[in-house]
Image (spheres, rainbow, N blue to C red):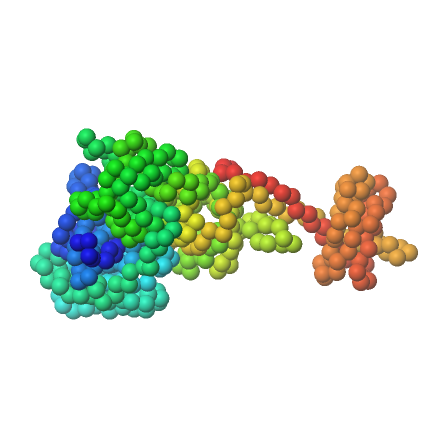
Length: 464
């Protein structure tokens, strides 16, 4: 096992499209919550959590990451997609592609996964023609997705038909990610549990760096530390592990109940924590909803999935000016999180609308972190429109920009602009009713509308 190259393959698809049966047919060893070991999964008859199983494939040690197919569990699908190199997408031959089929493809594409095997499952329950028709439909769907390495295979997990072909298809598309073993140690925690006599065990896939038995490691964002008493990969003890390895790490000095999915094991002081981010987002063309200021969204920051508010902005005169809504293909935004979280600065951002019904596309878009500020300071635009009252002895008098003489005096020195785009400077107040004198760059006509704008700095926090 030590000589095999670790790779991680997501197992995705609509509910009841045969993921867990396929995992059972492929797998040689079961790890955390694998094959629906979770009691609620057995009670409900569906996958409700990420499950991990293992098998050898040529030179690879493959960890299957079985993600729930139920629409309500999209957060777990996103969490699983952040640690995989490739994916198997199951599509049942008796039902064909469903909404979650497309949703899972968008998740994979958004997070940079460009190789996938489409497994047409349950072929024993339909005619050959029906199975071929579903495969043809999926080939059409995949053509528009941009995946670089794609294979198709028809299988029946219950009868063992096509399993060897599936293995060969997976081998043909697998392209392991480049492993960064030189950066500080970082591992998102997907499960945490106590073992009698040993204390807390955390499991996860190492994203970056290395860890050795006895190393001091931190749990972010908790800020507490522990020694790594022992390290295992699928029940085999090891002295150390590195990026790409799937491991369980015993950290007896930390109570397991303090740890949640999305916390990180990391080198001490190497992962920042924050409740706000500046991000650049590319919108999902299949998302049909609006993107508005302070809209509540689910924010996937790598494995952690948190509630946040999105505040789109555009740069004007060096200022980040808040937009009420956005309809561009790409945009910048502040994300204000409901709670502070550990931030992996290299993680892909995924924005979701989990409040929408599963019959609609819920993935808003994906992007990257531009900045992790101490606080979110943006500017709101305030504008007022006036009109040229008269032009006298070279003075252009404008009414409507201020409501009183005092307010007019406060505008002196600020810029104004006509609707036709001629810039001017407010030079003085005139009279007692808020009329101002404006000097423009070029002559303007009578009765032209004049706009005065100013930008007010505001700090944003999560809330109404």
